Image (cartoon, rainbow, N blue to C red; front, side):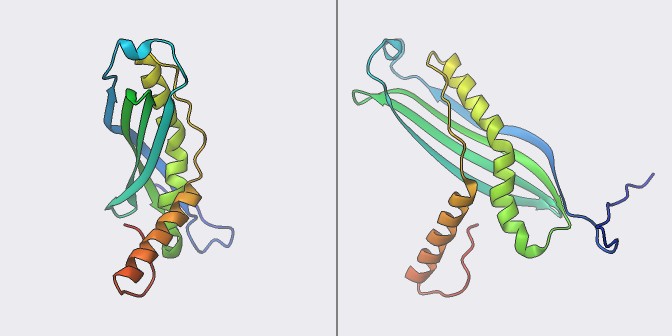
Length: 167
């Protein structure tokens, strides 16, 4: 039996759809270089976290979106732990207007997989002997805007004009 596409209320256009086909860990690294000394009680560590979003079209209507999250905890200029996670999702995206695809892939897709990556980081840091790393929710819309602005500045510095879109 053939799969039928859902129609919009007008009945003339197929309805847009966004589905998670699968999720995966591409890379996971946890380092506790000063263990077991790093596990002793002391002042609260300084924790730095960075997050990046990347996307790659795999084939028609199929996109791989990956979150790269790096976290490092330090106390007294010594690394307590360092963790890097590249967590991805494979998304089927159908019937969206072309002008909505880029923000959809770079904002909505990361928002959908982030809770799973956050849980994984909490589990890994806890298994490594530390309290779980509990990340706050991330505003992927803000990251998207910052990346657009950075790309626009880069184009201006290179003497190019036109619309800026991150890769």
